[in-house]
Length: 65
Image (cartoon, rainbow, N blue to C red; front, side, top):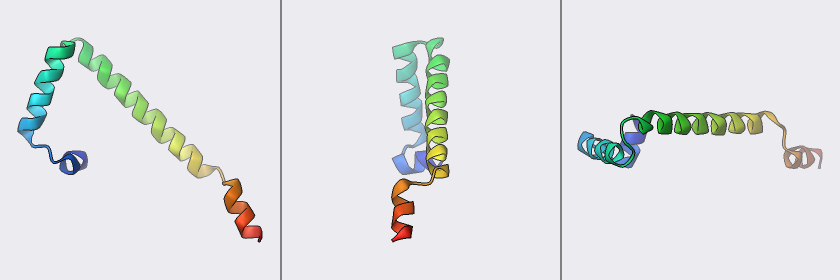
């Protein structure tokens, strides 16, 4: 719901977007698209978490000076 607030979308906007998606892709293709979006978001989050766990070479050199 936070994303909807940031984008300032009302339920009418979301309904129109959903109808356009159904018209463009058809009802059978939408679950595949959402799965792809979900897996892409998951991969992005995993990559960000891996970056946070790795100590940066720049940070360690700054501490030694």
